[in-house]
Structures are given as C-alpha cells and as structure tokens.
Image 1 (cartoon, rainbow over the protein chains, first blue to last red):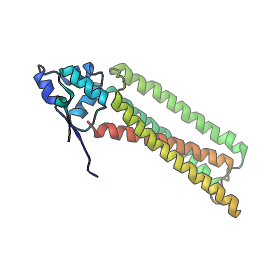
Image 2 (spheres, rainbow over the protein chains, first blue to last red; image 1 turned 90 degrees about the vertical axis):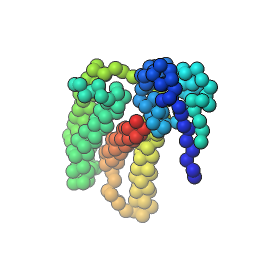
Image 3 (cartoon, one colour; image 1 turned 90 degrees about the horizontal axis):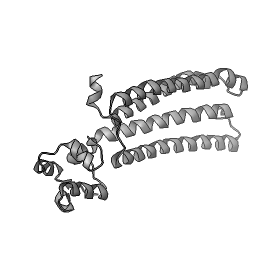
Length: 69
Length: 157
C-alpha cells in the first residue's frame, strides 16, 4: 500500500506573515508548539479542523496551506 | 534546572511517567518474583505477611515519587493543554497497553482451563499467585503505554 501524505506550506506561510514564530502560530491555532514543529517537519497529518484553523490564521484557502499527494 | 527549559512540559511528564513505571515495576517484580518462584503461594499468611507490605511499599514509593517529580516539573515549567496530537498518541499507547493486558489475561485463562481439562497443575497457579501475576502484568502494560506514548511523541518532532 502506498502511504499518502498531506504536505503543508506552514513554514513559508509563517515567513510571509511577518516571520510569525512557531509559538505564536501554536497559540493562535490552539495547539502546542511541538505540534507545529511536527507539522512543519511533515511528520504529522492534522485533523480537518486543525487544518482549517491554521489556514484561517494565515487567512488563506485550505488548499494553499495543505496539499494531498 | 536550566535543562528543563529545553523540553516541553508534556515531554518531561512523559519521561517522569516512564521512569515511575520502570521504578515501580523493577521494585515490585524484584521483590515478588522470588516468592512466586520459591513458594507454593497457597498460604494466606504469606499473602498477609510478605505480599501486602510489598504492595504498600510500592504504592508509597509511587506517591512520594509523583509528589516530588511531577510537582517539580509542573512548578518549573509552563503547563500545557493537551491538543489533538497528544490525544492521538495517548490513544495509540492505550491500545498497546490494552493489547498487552488482554493477551496476558488470555494466557492465564488458557493455563487455568488447561489445568482443569487435563488435571494438571501447570505453573501451579493458586488464586494468590494469579493475583500477583495480574499485578505484574498491570505494571508492565502501564510501562508499555508510557514507552509507546513517549516513542510516538519523540518520533514526530
């Protein structure tokens, strides 16, 4: 079975958003900083709700923040 | 205490929990194993005079450890709310723990049924001995849970 992965652009979006820190994003998305670290390292696939919350923090559509390969 | 700031509150709690599980398991198993191996374990006096003090000592060690270590961690580091990732890893670790416990229980039940069917006394299982084995399994499954939780947590960061 081929393992599908959800890719994300969180690091780039953070950089574009005045170099927002991981801690700031974590606070705004109501998760821990470790979860943001795991997401940026592409080692954790978020729930749909968290994905929407993160996209909302950056004010971008969901598909710009997350891609399904 | 500066090194505490290099780790998240959640991770420190997981390390502390794993250490507690290992500490209690090692202490309890090292004290109980010779009794299980050497004695028939049919006597209630043995249960009262030897086993109960070991159980009580283990509980007291766990309480003192928890107060000191968890108290220190939660005082010196900022407490974190659990998020979805923590809950997922917690569920995965509970699954492992539950599997260990269930398989061990089935093995014990299997031995009891085997003994009953074939009039054997394989393992010489008395109710007292079964109780002690179940306690050991509970400690080991708890250690398995803590280990899995920490492994999953560390793997993803």
